[in-house]
Image (cartoon, rainbow, N blue to C red; front, side, top):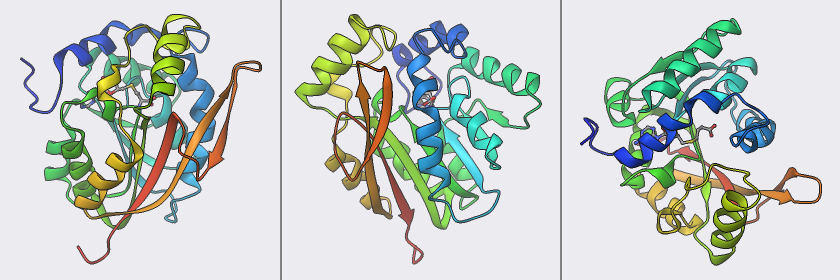
Length: 238
Ligand code: SAH
C-alpha cells in the first residue's frame, strides 16, 4: 500500500519503470514532447499574471514544468514517482532551471499552500488516480481566487479505445504499452462536473488532433475529441 491515500501503486510503478526515458524525445514518451509547445501555449496564453506561480501536479520527469519555467513561470512540480522526480531534479539543474520538485500528494500541498498559486496544471494525470475528483478539489484549494486550473486527459470513447490504446500504445508505440486503462479515461462532462463541484468555472476546452501522416498534432479549439485539455477559473467569491 502506498503511503498516499489517493494514489494507485500500480500506476505509480508504471511511471517508476519508465523514469529513465522521460527525456528521450524519440522514445515512447516522445508524444509528450511533441505536444508540449501546444499545451504550454494554451496554458501561458490564458494566465494573466506575469511570472505566475504554477503548481504542476503529476509532473513526471518535468517536461511541462521546464517549458513553463522557460516561459517565465515560477514552478513547483509534484509527483509520487520518486525515480521520475529524481530525473526531473537532475534535468532541471543540468539546464540551470530553478524548479521546486516535491514528493507529496496534491492534497497535502494544497492544505499547506491554500490559495498559494496563480495557476495549477495537471496534465495527463487524472486518468491514473483512484479519485480524480479529489485531485481536482485539491487543485482548486491550492489556487488563489481568480486563479486558473488546467487539466488534460483522454476521453472515454470507443474512438479513444481504438486509436489511443489499441493503435497508439500497441501498434504505433506513441506511448508505452499499458499506459492507459479504458475504464479510467474521463469524459469532458465528468471533468466539468467535478470542477464545478470544486468551485472552478469552466472557460474553454480544446483538443489535440493527431495527424498520422505527418506525425504532428494541432489544436482544435472548442472541440471535444480524444485528447483534450481544458481550463477553469476559481470563482472569486469562494
Ligand atoms: N504531467 C506530465 C506527466 C504525465 S504522466 C506530462 O504531461 O508531461 C502521469 C504522471 O502522473 C506520472 O509521472 C505519475 O507518476 C503521476 N501520478 C500518478 N498518480 C499520481 C498521484 N496520485 N499523485 C501525483 N502524481 C501521480
